[in-house]
Image (cartoon, rainbow, N blue to C red; front, side, top):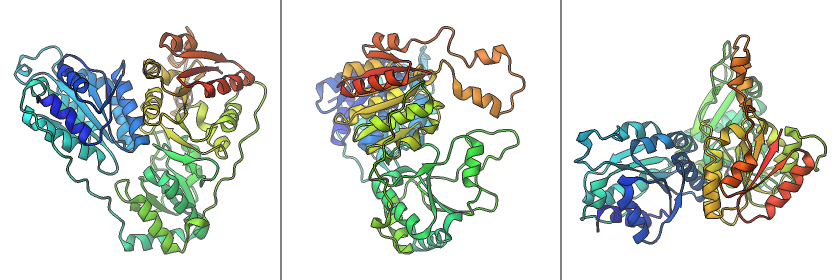
Length: 514
């Protein structure tokens, strides 16, 4: 077999079942191998950011890596923003990037670039295969690197001649180390801190926000009186009726500072100490009070569920002590469209076991309270802050979870970065309903303009934050990608469109005009 065939066979043997691809000339032997070797579903993406974002969504729900296939350095460059988001979400991805044949690189052809240099800032593991016989072993190590807790991006660079040359060998995936448990001393110190009650906080992230983790955290809070809160942006949180409900640290800095102002003891589990998203004149970068004692009980790479169970035992809590959210979907509203009423519609109509992909940015800041008592669901956020993730994220989630309804909540400006992923949803007949918040602006930047103290913004500045000249037509854009779309300009129209979308088995877009 050639190197490309050994790569595909190693991926299949290592449990990789999906490849989100945007290939070029240098990757044609890998493309041919994907066709000739059974076991991997190939999903074509029209833009590399769609491929990397879809791999992120797939990994968050499947709990294992997908592969990506990108074309040389420029293709990797196009996918970097969503690899950044995937790194922040701690999503396992085997990121395969084609390279010129090794003998062609010295000629500095137009697409030649420093691929390893581009890959390192968004990858925990980077390697360039040096021969066909090494490709399989390199792929096996990439799978292991990506799968190691807490999950990470592993970039394997594949020169064309290593793909087309015979001598490929299939390799087994090396053993993956088990996550570590915190020491008994760390458990005891955290227990002492949390027993101090409301001035103590347990800040959660990563897998601690799944059902078992939330059960233990809720029990600890019930026993000690401490507060439990999630970090600002979370890769995946299990929410809804029957689950332990917690709030997040708010994004706006003043609200975040207010949330944490009384905290004197902060215990971190699966996350890091909270900081402001940006620097603001006259405001701190760290969100905790200066006299707050901070302890890291477990990093995202550690055994978070085991750490919570041990902490619960240390404070005398049992899983059944946790207070669970009762079913309390809001009533359906009437009248003009507002973000509060939109939240009520989502909370009332969200189906059982839905997966919500949230890149609402501004419109969705108040969505959490109204969906607290909705039917059980998963909520995925933009973890790295690089906009343009939402539509690809939902695409990957739908590939991983074909039996679940995916609800994509999308800002219009962010959606324009990667709207090509709607085409992939149509091609793959994915069960995604996308709601576009058409406020005709980069609304988040309007508030940031004030927040950073910009002086006397005039027409030129405000025009750079506006999307209404001309206005985007998302219904036409969706239809151009092969996806049915409708427009909702009132709450009643939104309710009707939402209900219609729930009945669709393929992709569906609702442009919500605000």
